[in-house]
Length: 111
Length: 111
Image (cartoon, rainbow over all chains, first blue to last red; front, top):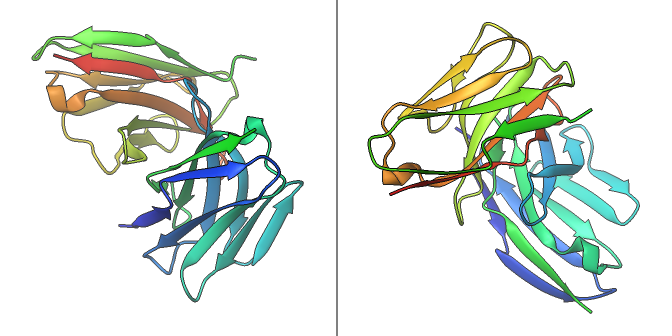
């Protein structure tokens, strides 16, 4: 099955700086790559996703890039704010129902 | 519109006891999922139901059973709980192979 690795496991940034989280996947057939944000005590919530026919996607302060050749994708958060503090998960799937998640990155935004 | 609801929120079981975790969604989604979340391991798929009347194993199905009671409800049963099943359990639903909507989770402790 698909194996997703996520780095770093923790990330501390100064408010206003950028944060980058990187993920690699093992199965070159994977074609859907969502990112979820989980706040304390809540379930994960989708923040952005990308498909394999697209190299980059932006939504306000967040962006995701995909490199199919290298089998890695990244989440970029610009102008970080305190409300960006959360756990972020990347995931990958071969266009079926089985999402494979990374281990998560705990992001802390320092005021 | 409550989205995905789960009951109970917390549960403590003794080894060998059984229990059923309940999940319901009011978004008319076809697909439903059960995940477990353990520290440092992200979310792992236990079972999923692509549509009413079907269920399939995910990555970690051993020790669990599921029932898709109708389009709205998907339950997870632990027949004989073990300490290794101490975890946070999330139910999710989706209308297609895209965004999954997660419930608030059930925190289960098996002693």
